[in-house]
Length: 67
Image 1 (cartoon, rainbow, N blue to C red):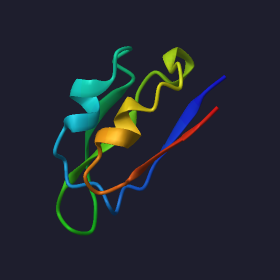
Image 2 (cartoon, rainbow, N blue to C red):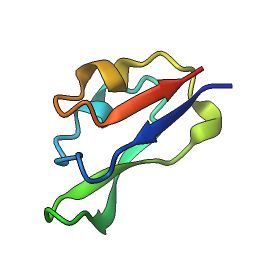
Image 3 (cartoon, rainbow, N blue to C red):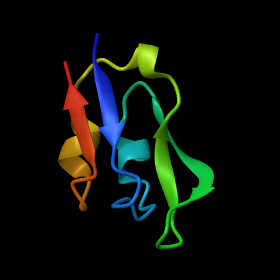
């Protein structure tokens, strides 16, 4: 089973990860980090296939994928 870890303080709410996820496992949440950005969250971790598209496209390297 794959899982992702998002470093919320590094996320700048660009939504690239949301767009790139083929299983729609990531969404921009409603909480704000200390820099004032709404950050990405894993919403359906059980559907994650570990493709790592989200981690590859993240300009802030805020996502790590574990398989």
